[in-house]
Length: 380
Image (cartoon, helix red, strand yellow):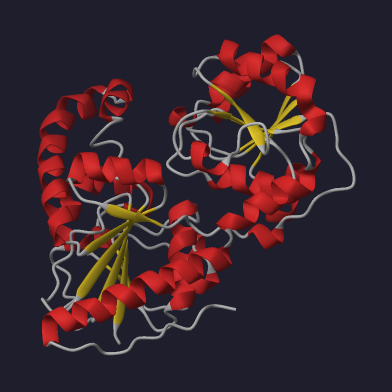
């Protein structure tokens, strides 16, 4: 069986690339197609595969300015020739699913989210855009929305990374999606024998993650907060923060693991599609104080593995922290870590393998009239 994996761009290792990495382990001979590829920023697991790019790769400064070329990406995808493949798996949160394939090919899309900047978060992106972008954005995004919705019809089966995203897919594409949670390397985290007196916020420092709420809340509380991560909001957040807030920037994986295991709790103020960071914190036995919307509702168990705050305001977050400190002793590290195992890599491999085997056999029956047995070996 010839397999192609299609990913929107390969310029860093975030949640979407971690899913692609797992798919590479499931299909070690698969070819990868993407708009822009920076091998230095990608894991060795992905780099071991043959990677083919669209013409976007050859455009000026594409590795840094790839998002500026978004209006060209639908055309770029449709220039790819994938007729020789039996199975295509697209990894979608940017333009990836719109490839053209043969009738005999099965196309499964693992959707991290329909493109936020085209759909429900469009007003936020428009409000923060510069003058030139703001002038061009309405016409360009109107065209991209039509293409995005039409290209959803090219997919045979959708998989979403959460129930939250399955609802977005139903709303924007009018398609159903099976939910398979993304793989989290829960085995790499451990419960610490010691706990220090600080809270932790970890992840990319961008506007929609609402890190500013945590800064404002901890400025008022005066409690120690450690911030690990990097992004466009770093300098502005530093300017807002009091002396009780420490910024560590990017950190190696082992340092992040150490801070996860020693914090009082993880602060998670954004509305995420799924949210790998809370699962990593829980795998370390630490509770999560999260905004009660989005993927966090599916990963955090209120009162067992963490607490929710209801409004995306500093006041609501402060109330949740104060409530947490009154019941902090009820959170049992071993119970929290056990819950995190339901989002492990093993669970992902099992569910994805079963899904692909069933859909591939049914597709063969529909196309050629009989089923070709397909057995995927699980990654050990």
